[in-house]
Amino acid sequence: MLSPLRERLAEARGAFSAVFTNAGLRRLELSWTGTVCAYWIFIVTLSLYAYEQGGAGAVGLVGLLRVLPSVVAAPFGAVLGDRYPRERVMVAINLARSVTIAAAAAAAFAGAPAGIVYALGSLMGLLQSTFRPTQAALLPQLARTPEELTAANLVLTTIEGIGIFIGPAAGGLLLAATGTDVVFAATAGVFLASAFLLVGVRGTPGAPAAGVRGSFLREALAGYGTVARDARLRLVIGLYGAQTLVAGALNVLIVIAALELLGLGKAGIGYLNSAVGIGGLAGGLGALALIGRTRLASDFGAGLVLLGLPIALIGVFPNTAAALVLLGIVGVGTTVVDVAGVTLLQREVSDEVLTRVMGVVQSVFVGTLGLGAVIAPLLISALDVRGALIVTGAVLPVLAVPAWRSLRRIDDQLAAPGRALDLLRRIAIFRPLPPATIEQLASHVVPVRVAAGDVVIRQGEAGDRFYVVAHGEVEVDVDGRGGEVLGEGDYLGEIALLRDVPRTATVRARTDAELLALDRDEFLGAVTGSAESADAAHAVAAARLSSLRPSVASV
Image (cartoon, rainbow, N blue to C red; front, side, top):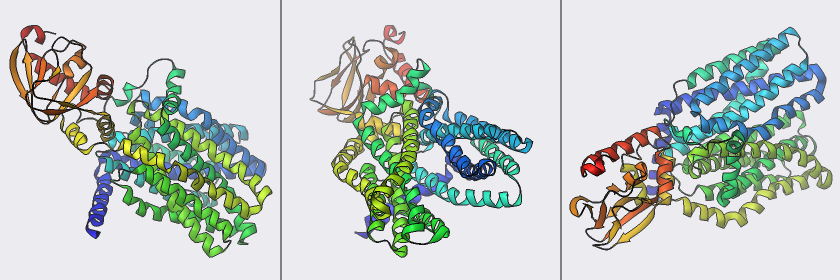
């Protein structure tokens, strides 16, 4: 029994290590490290600046201005990541953030009205809400395998957790030694360096260009439309929103629990938040088990329960030691939910609209986080702190348990048939595609069984499918003359789809055979979404046409 477990862990470690040998992912990770730390330094500095200018009320106003606009803007800004190469969009965003913070430094140094700095802080929030969805959509283009994609998400989640510790601490030290204007300027430099790190990153060529075209509004709403049409996405994003709602409430409940329930004083607020952070880092080790898993939706549901139940138990057992342990478990659950949830969405959503769907997720994330912070005081007022903790913690298990069957069904639907996936990976046309895209194709193949002598496609008819031979043999017949015999792993039907012409040959089963069929739209959507894949496909089509009769070859 231990042998399969050891093999799984060895595979997980291998995928985790592979992330650091992938040049594109490595640059992205280094850039993300600087970005996370710089962003939190900026938040701390902006908060202090606001406090010096207008007290606690100004701090609250800045927090609202920084977060609220991104609720609406995130899906619209995400259009850029589906219209243009994502790595370039990320470089542009980091350059824009560097300029924005440099402007805030200049305004603070010159003693300009505080409103100018506040407005620049709001712009920073808008840029952040566009950066995260674009980064999430770029990862599947950089990862070489599904396992590497999960590992990359885990690495970035861990970096973010560490950055949340290091960033505020570094910001505090810098502010103690200098002033807000100097720290603003230093932060601008970090964002500039992060932008240069991304210059060497190259995603799948041409993939973003396949996005929906039309009016900007139509493109922006495509993310919402994709979510509205897919019950699986609605379920996952809805549960994700519930998780961030609970997280927003927990941010408030930790403060009140430390001061009133546990009597820990102001220092206790830091202790309790640190417990969540430490649990998140520990959860990163546990999340190694997710690498290579095909049942991420079930893992996502389990993570929700693991996150919510300990919060409720703090209300049942209001003890400091217990609270620290339970909040550590909350951190573990948060990491599992983040890694499984994001990876699940990356593998489920079509690349052409992925940034916009992640923009919807970002909008839900920010909105529910703020809503949770508003609801928490109301719960405390109505139920006291213990009651509020119990109710808040119960939300996720109450939602996850009845959704369990649906989550398992998602796993069943998304688990690409191993044989189909293996065959598609071997085909030169699909080899340039991101692993997540090939997985999606494999999950959409339709098995077609034919008996010896049956016609698979007929010359002169319209083309509607692309076929891969899984078992048996088929023979290509042009103008009544027998020709090439295709066997396991060979494919057919691409010429009519790529050139939009009638079938150029008749293909008949030579033996009993099983074919895997892809519908026209699925095939063309994947192939034409990547410049390398499209070039490979047209090269194959040209080579095959040249071997046919002259009248066909001239098409």
